[in-house]
Length: 324
Ligand code: T6T
Image (cartoon, rainbow, N blue to C red; front, side):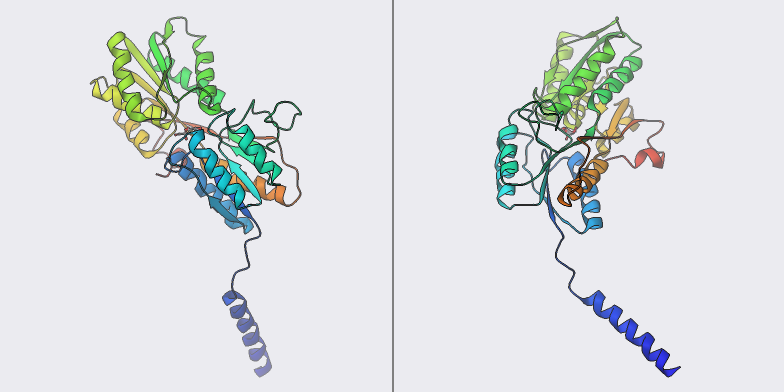
């Protein structure tokens, strides 16, 4: 009895000792370079990445710039390469301009995976193209998302009238593909006229001013597709400033809380939610697999959820609202 108690106590003491021991050094360091740091989309991606990093015992190094811009992103990437992480996850801010800087990471022996956006043609490890070297591309199907946005906007305007795409700037894989998908959908609607795309440089104020300028030239403007978070917020703000809420329809890509508020108020009709936490989670898990000598698929597709006023309070839908 006495011996048993002592034995049990010994075990408990050992357990306490091992709990109190300093935690072992991280098994690896994985860097995540977002398009920009102050964007709810990447903030949410970071959360998923942190969760995976914790699960596998790696450190996550989250380092990015204040603007979605290759001139800002390249020096951040160079600083990250100098720290020699075991792998780099990056959302390249330009399809062409990030190819050479990322090649430097590979030359330094650091495996590269792109998340959200891609470089070159986005088809990796197929032996063709200068930007073939990243090991995987983990992202939303942006053509499909743009297509769904197009169908939603067409239906909300009664399949007739003038619409345009509010977009960031040419050369970004995600937003280029969303516009492509949107225009593909529009082919099925002969009574809809697609006006020239307006590029806003990821500036919601500029996107809002553009709605007003397009309306000044087209008083029968029926709808706007905001191809990312800032384009959509600006489109909604512009429609509101015109006093045309619910008259000029808005479909948004991305779902931070403000866009959800605008869905509820009727300013935005539909919003396409990406699953950024999923992108971050699978990004880290894929990097961990590579670090441990495993092969990974060259592309991993993550989900889309279409939100509207009627479904956004359902917890299974609401869980895809981004964290601000
Ligand atoms: O839409 C996301 C992202 O997918 C895109 O590549 C850039 O813009 C966002 O970060 C939203 O601001």
